[in-house]
Length: 327
Image (cartoon, rainbow, N blue to C red; front, top):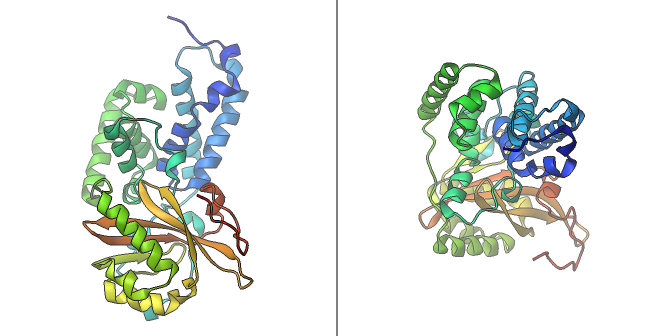
């Protein structure tokens, strides 16, 4: 059996784990921005400590130990992140105000291509998508930080209890106890699973794109479930019901008329980067829309109103007049 010596821990050896570490830190922290910071800090600490790495464990488990400590440090000083639907009952359109909550209070979106494995195994990919769903990531935020780490490592990444115990410098019994408590908490949250997107739902996605860009409100509403939900972090408000969403689209949401959409994939969901008219013939980034389907209709539209997200998704930060849309 060969071991890794300090001289073998080269930057490229560390970089090969960036995608999976980003997924781990995102599940821990609930924010793409904070996950980026955590992974970068992990890489810096790992490179600085390379001389102290004696090959007693694999590079991967060594990096996860560092990443876990970074995340635990970050979580000590912040509140639990949530989704608008977790904070109270649905609101009426007329109650909308410009009131926003701070960025660190919301679970944010994460592009699929930054966290999902590059695998051809459909079952593995489906499981990975489930583990970054907005509802699941939000439910994880209800767990104490160490329980969160235990559940992710054991249930999502399939580590052995003994491996997790070594990483957290605790006992196997303590790991098993933390896992049992974490499972009970998540069971109480009753997080529903989602089915893979069907061919019919892909067609529905195209119809949504056409209706939104032409701002055909009647066409948009026809695509919604009777109890469809709309949320828009950082705004506190969320609304529910096809009729209420229709009122939104012709009321406070009317500023979206004339928007253009570019496709994205995030949190195992399909969606769009939404660009609003800039008044000069071009379009400015506005928000990331993620859609949830139920059967042959749209069950939820989660809009994250934050232009800073667009570089995270590899999207242009402005669309000039006449500029061809990226493929």
